[in-house]
View 1 (tube, rainbow, N blue to C red):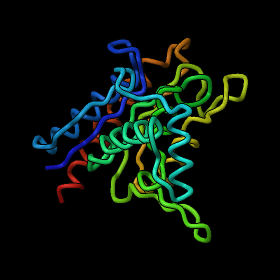
View 2: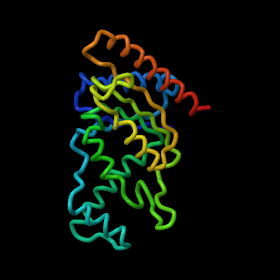
View 3: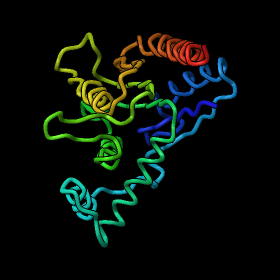
Length: 214
């Protein structure tokens, strides 16, 4: 049985454009693979730990070849449990609204908690980084209310997709598919763009599930 983990970075619940897009993707996916196990991780649900002084001390100890001790060891175990929740999935769906030209801080918090040596990556002084989440495809659903690919910098800049997809590849995830719904919501074309994006998300979910089962 395939486990699909949906990681949501939006706090807007029923008002969220990214969550609505995710619902369409999952509807298509489950149409093709009704037996798939779908898990939802709302990053705003209070389960995501902070990555503060104790966790940083643990990370530096591990980098130096030592075992974390005391409060640092406790913080390291918490980070590992968070990573294991992520690593347990076979494939990922990330719903990512744009905040201030990039990803919401709660998604960056997840990245900072799990991006640890022996978890998301290994490191060699000569060879550099190796991502350890290999073999897990990811779909990313981007939404935004102002910036769009046809608009200039008066409407902002997209740092969200380049940053997040670089992190995915750095973590070993090379099979990345995306859907974007980024209309200027102050204009009349938003509804048309929304219908098109929902149809694209549904079709992508359906097709990826079919491909995975083939």
